[in-house]
Length: 198
Image 1 (cartoon, rainbow, N blue to C red):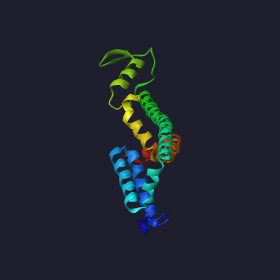
Image 2: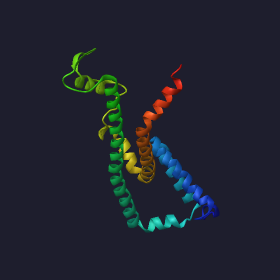
Image 3: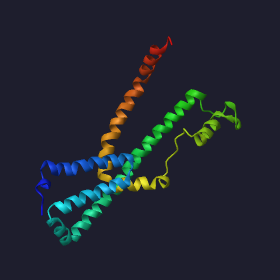
Image 4: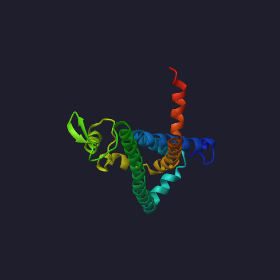
């Protein structure tokens, strides 16, 4: 029996769909697969238990159509997995570039000719940088698909929420990162002026 509060278009219908979708967005960002699955099961149970009973009848009588929807969902999820992996690698590359720039600022140019004494012996700047990249706990690591298998499967499984969040959040962050990169020195100058006499 359909409950009036879950009829399409009512405030309760939209709350019962949009609030869980918002929770899914959070779960995707925080990579909480258990909470995401529980949210989907809870919403499905809510609509099956209090929604139109004809939905179960329709599902039982249209197995081919259901399989087509599932195949489409999986296909889009696979494509999204590659798109999201690209965004993930782009962010990881940005972290590597930031680490490298900071290292150069603190240690000098990375080259094969400059020799430096380190705790590891005498190394070229390039060897020193590569060693720091491998051993420093602050150094970002190059991601591999094998080490991110669970993450990639999560993105593919929950692609609608993952796509919405990524397409809204990543470009927004990139715009402000670009602005900060252009204005960062102005922020630094303000800080130096504020504390120059202390």
